[in-house]
Image (cartoon, rainbow, N blue to C red; front, side, top):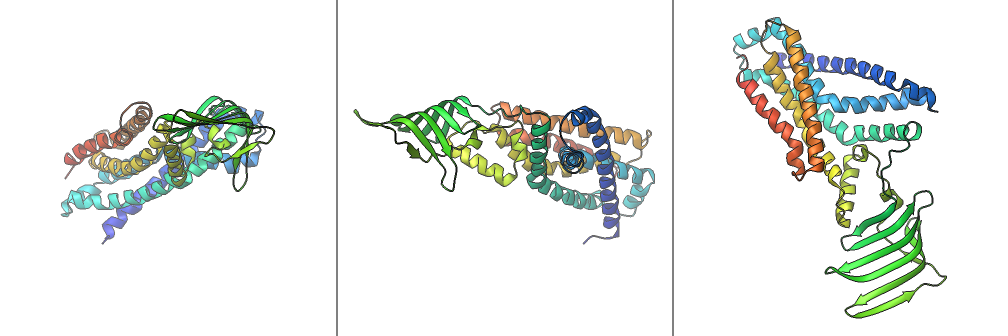
Length: 363
């Protein structure tokens, strides 16, 4: 049961946190606007799109990026004030144990972690998708890094597609090849001079000037296509040729899981960045609890330098966490390190630091 002391600390925690969010939001908007004002003027984006579409989604992105750090700053700020006003000493002298004193902090951290989970998995990806679409349309049209020349792509574990060129404008492919394997042996080869994607309820590819070779041991069967095209259903669509930078951060978690499942069924090896994003979304909410413990332990006693030293230390610790988490994302995406181990490594490091700070906190 939460008592008056708990509600008192929870109220201070949440009020300070959302005030910190407001301050950082205003600073972030001013900085981003000053950096992009020339691009706003030169592009065709409207004032309504800037005000009601771009900036709200930009705020979702920046707050999602800084949410754990803002939690730490808020904890240090109001806990430092309580310590300087001798409130914490009075609470501990009244017989409240330090572990009991941590309860309202962890309850508040749990509430913020729940908000963060909802944001990371659903709201922030939606905002990222909307914001990056605006940037692609008005600011940067070259963010698509999808491959369209000499494309090799698995559409099933034992089925591979090759084409010398794919046109995103009209969804056509040149020099199309569809290869099927069984026990590492080629069993069927379909070649076509051109292929076109036909959308619909049952989408398919229409092959023109084709030939189909079927292999059964030493026997080979050849089917040559004349003027009549060949329609075939393949687990491949034009969206598979599009790969925007940071595309994984624009997918909600259900979409991310569906995409990963689809790519694994195909046997695709280019899924590392999506696995890293999924692991990041599972790791970062726990960071809020860890940084909360560090904040209470650091700010829970009076210091000669006052609250300024404590805030500076908090910002340093938060910045260090952000740096380590970005570094972990880079290492996990490129190295042979297990994805979840790489993404949880900052949490493990900071959890050790939290245990040290709590063990040496004022009792």
